[in-house]
Image (cartoon, rainbow, N blue to C red; front, side, top):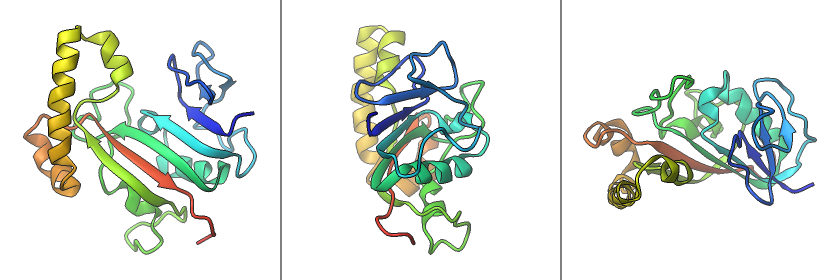
Length: 190
């Protein structure tokens, strides 16, 4: 078994990963409903877990994060992409959007709502134009490349001050498509 897990892969499985989805019609290795706990994996199994536009579909993202902490190895990475709240509800199955404050809930010193699941934030990035594998199929090539270029410029400015951009500037640029987080499970229990 591989040490990389791709959660909610749908029709976009990743080579070299164990691909999981709730739908038996998806291109999967494992069929499992991620709202059902525990997940069908042993503790400390994966070095890398990716979840691309998945958490917004689930009932309890904080419980999901605790379960992902259980199955990722100490020092392992959790790479998550979710819709930013400014555009998070453009899909009829989305239950929530996310913000730059999401990582706070995994910091033991955050007295405003630490969840008991520690993660170290390694990267956070706002994306104005995202999901290129899907957009390439949906848009004419000229528009895809135009939006990719505009997105690179908007992203550069936005990520100079993510908190300001997430809370205010996002409304001036039509919202951000997604926010990307890379978390690391601490080597030692906290």
